[in-house]
Amino acid sequence: MSKNFNLVKEFYNDKLWSFKMTWNAVSRWITAEEYQEITGEEYK
Image (cartoon, rainbow, N blue to C red; front, side):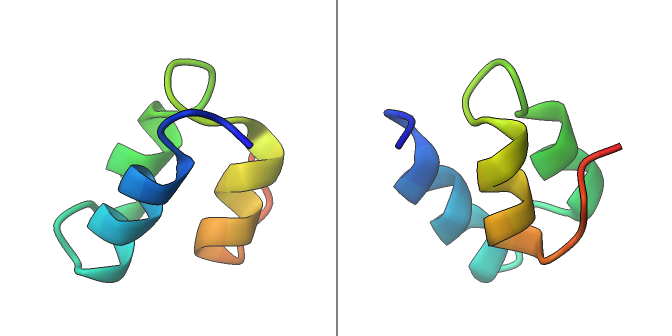
Protein backbone atom coordinates (compact mmCIF):
# COMPACT_ATOMS: atom_id res chain seq x y z
CA MET A 1 0.00 0.00 0.00
CA SER A 2 1.32 3.41 -0.93
CA LYS A 3 2.17 5.87 1.79
CA ASN A 4 -0.61 8.26 0.71
CA PHE A 5 -3.29 5.70 -0.18
CA ASN A 6 -5.49 6.42 2.85
CA LEU A 7 -5.20 10.16 2.36
CA VAL A 8 -6.16 9.99 -1.33
CA LYS A 9 -9.03 7.61 -0.54
CA GLU A 10 -10.33 9.96 2.15
CA PHE A 11 -10.12 12.98 -0.17
CA TYR A 12 -12.00 11.09 -2.89
CA ASN A 13 -14.66 9.68 -0.56
CA ASP A 14 -15.24 13.11 1.02
CA LYS A 15 -15.67 14.52 -2.52
CA LEU A 16 -12.70 16.84 -2.08
CA TRP A 17 -11.05 15.21 -5.10
CA SER A 18 -12.66 14.35 -8.44
CA PHE A 19 -11.90 11.33 -10.68
CA LYS A 20 -9.41 13.52 -12.58
CA MET A 21 -7.61 14.68 -9.46
CA THR A 22 -7.39 11.10 -8.22
CA TRP A 23 -6.24 9.97 -11.67
CA ASN A 24 -3.48 12.59 -11.53
CA ALA A 25 -2.26 11.12 -8.23
CA VAL A 26 -1.31 7.82 -9.92
CA SER A 27 2.46 7.34 -10.05
CA ARG A 28 2.95 10.29 -7.72
CA TRP A 29 0.96 9.24 -4.66
CA ILE A 30 -0.81 5.95 -5.48
CA THR A 31 -0.57 3.02 -7.89
CA ALA A 32 -2.94 2.23 -10.75
CA GLU A 33 -4.31 -0.71 -8.74
CA GLU A 34 -5.01 1.58 -5.79
CA TYR A 35 -6.76 4.03 -8.11
CA GLN A 36 -9.08 1.23 -9.20
CA GLU A 37 -9.72 0.26 -5.57
CA ILE A 38 -10.59 3.86 -4.64
CA THR A 39 -12.72 4.81 -7.65
CA GLY A 40 -13.98 1.47 -8.90
CA GLU A 41 -12.77 2.47 -12.39
CA GLU A 42 -9.88 0.96 -14.33
CA TYR A 43 -6.90 3.29 -14.71
CA LYS A 44 -6.35 4.05 -18.40
